[in-house]
Length: 354
Image (cartoon, rainbow, N blue to C red; front, side, top):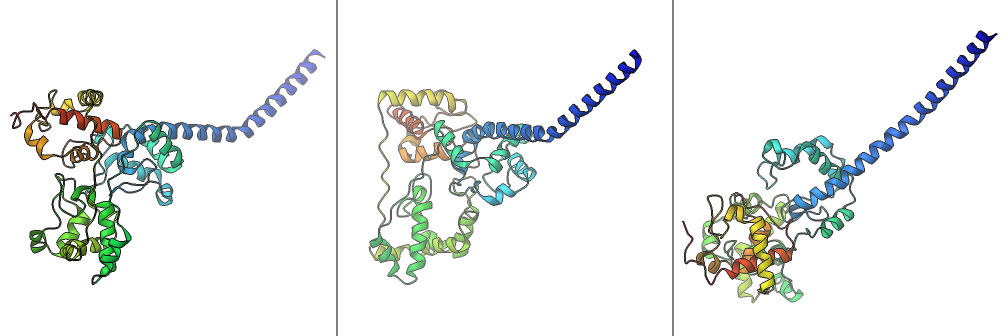
């Protein structure tokens, strides 16, 4: 009798275990799915901070793309397979400003961090990304642009091929004036474009190639990914026919840079930022090192405007070890660094120390 009861109890226990296992098995896919979702969310959150600190300076706070760098906030990129995106981040893209970011390639990201950035590109809400970038004070400063009045555009449109010239002028005002000057007169960081010598020695094809491909070792990046061939041709026509605009009385208001705050507090902040971010390359007293040139000298400070210094800090110098700090430093930080460097001018040596 006892043996029969034990057998029956063993049978019930076996049935109960089987039922519990069946229920657990039925629920397991849901648990796995939820775990995968939770892991993906964690990856996106971690990736947003990486994006803010390293990528927003070029691709924009909301992934909209800045200047010649492409937008990341688009359906085509979201639909791309993760491995392809990861390889691009890891290895960079030859012939562009996109450097290799994997630690094995000389970059700063581990494979896990690259996967987190891929999660941001594929799954993040870009409004939330922009909000986080802003909260960290890493929103890139807006590029200086000039406003074209309807009267100015109407004057240009009255010229032969006026519509094409007007289109070229609008592109120039938005994308080129910050570096080359409002009226193509050139600045300390970019050459004159309204030049008889340039027009005499450069064909339309020459100018189009420079605009499309850029100039290695300078701040001039290639614009082929941002401007269409038609838009590049419009800018080329504008450069070649700029004297006609001058003869017609067309002039663009010069961009007025906001004066730099030279208060003791601003200079002190700039000195602290310089010691943290710049002294390793430019030297503790900014007299230069084998890695980077001297800044504490009359030659540099007299020839370089406050706006040009800010532009160099924000945008970096392609072809050198000078990175773009616009995504790591706020506009106020860049202005403070400019104030600090400008404060050195009264005591700076006449030429750079060897």
